[in-house]
Image (cartoon, rainbow, N blue to C red; front, side, top):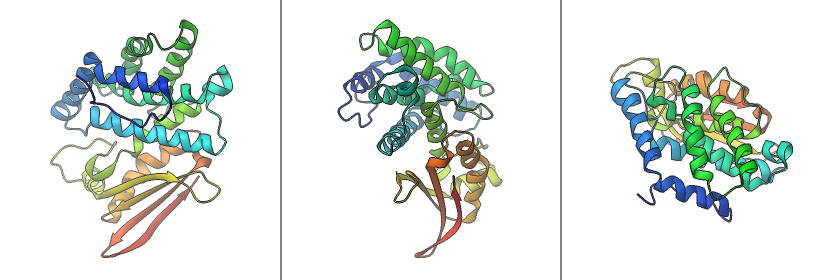
Length: 260
């Protein structure tokens, strides 16, 4: 299997090789499918498979690059003397592996994800890093996976990024708050209200701006119950500005604004 997973690795050749490994790793691709069988078919939850992984990885990578551009030092650079390129590898691997534990169970899936991810990370990094650096990256990836669910709090920049990026996958019913398919309640109505989520570089003192466009105000439930707590518990709150807007005909009305 090739070309099934793609992200803008730019000139990061290590990340390029990792991405190539992801696209040809049949066991990992199968685990993503199994995660979706458990999440969607058996539990009636939202997508936890390859589409979710790609969305989260792209958001995480974009967030990291914006933060680095604005002077934020990744934890693997600060604490281990490695490079920004290695931080990119960490956030991508954390993003693609944070939900693999869904093949076991929903409850405690982050713990199962840590257990399953270890072997996968070792396999994807083989031939790219030596033993010492591979061990450092593995530890940072596992930390990001373990802390992506509340109330666990990331102690690294990379972990905080994965936590927030996971929550940003909420467009048009792709809510990270599980809801039962076909059931009409605040979870389903709110999830279906999110029309567009855009992640961009801020124009002011706060480097990251998240703009959320909603079909109706019910979407604020998703923001209040998932995104806001994730940001507040990520360690990155001072770097992220969230603006939620509701569409009213051809005009947009600002419904609520969060600044961290």
